[in-house]
Image (cartoon, rainbow over the protein chains, first blue to last red):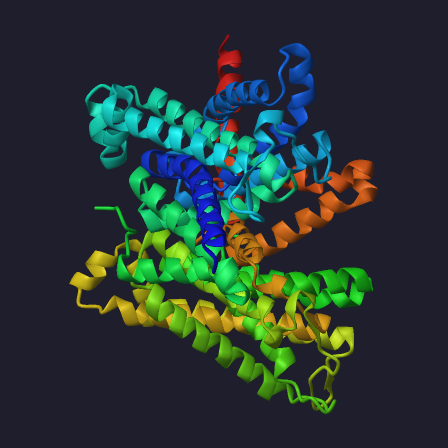
Length: 292
Length: 332
């Protein structure tokens, strides 16, 4: 493999891994803190991508600007969506068995997918990016790398750093970490767990929606995109250890690498590699990499 | 339906009568649902009776189905029913034994994901290698036969599926009453205590897992010979998910919950798809199904099985309240 090709694949792996991390971090938080198995998390990713497509015309006439104002509006909407969903559906599930949650979030997937089909339709769409992100970098005479992918990786890294800061350096982060390790104790210390749950859920939804929005120009927008990302994000979450942000980051990068290089080196077995990896890791460490 | 026996008698009795009164469309639909019901039963053994949430049931189902097609003779002669059924079941059981031996080392959500991982592996083997015929799947040209039983006739097929479901149901209900089944319940309720009582829980769980895989393979076999067609979607996680939804919908911890759930899920789908009922809205049947499922979670926390009891409680509660209102009015 040539060096330029290798570099391109590395960058692709990084970009894919970081994108997975954005979706999976929300999933692992909701899972670790609230104990909810949220199958509908992939739908939030799908909703994000469709927002990037469908909101753009309206946003550009009202606020001006194309891509970035759509991102901002989408982000605000997603926080509201997450807050309302937690209040309307998920807050009733905490006392229930896990499998009841599975059933309800399965119902939600169907509802989201079909609402999407009614509102936007079932066609595949593309999303355009601003002119200055649209170019490509020359790696050598023939190989180029799209600027937008670099931009995506950069944004994801910034968000990951921001999350690291929130979790380790702020009071909210402290409460969230405490919530993962001992829910009852947090409650008995007088922390408003209902509010905490709502914030965490809204954050998780916003992360997934954001991931969908910035992925839209690269992956295009298509029905069923949520389901494919959902399963792979669950893989990330369990490899990393449930509730561990650090684990999710590491696992997401690992999956990104394995998947990207698998497609290049072993195209016949590309689909199965990720699952082989997960099975091996879980047989070696039955609770994931970072669950103590 | 307080008595499971009465339920089983009525349920299987009605199913046996169906071909005499209903048209071919309904018979075909119910035959298909009965196959799903058998699959749901096999999952119920793991989830409801043993407390092991398996998210890879489709792999065993698919292996049974593919075995039915791949093991049939290539020269166009009629395969022997019992031999091909047995080999499909054994193949599925062997795969389940291997998967179970490894995945039972993990617990809870990790177990869910490891079983998913193994079923995805099987999916990709069928999907990406020449063995399984790729995305297009393979056709089964000659259906197996035995004596006068001709599975090309839809009534014979229906009868055979009905019998399979009945045998599966009776076998599981008897087994759960036996010491083996009691041990499985013990593991579900409190695994630590079972260990403390001196049970080696791993072999029990592995046996249940293998048995469940065998039953799924059986269901998959029926599916393949009924439709005469297999494709990789039979092993996809969507099917594993749907079966899980069926048994939760029906109510966990009861064999009849799996049967009810499979029928409710499939019939709801048919209902919401019916243009005669919903008109142009029928093409958005996913929305109605999703809302119905959410409503089920909200109003039936213990599944369909518990519905009669829940209704009785509701009615008697209301009745009392009405009665008390009446008496207070009378007093006034």
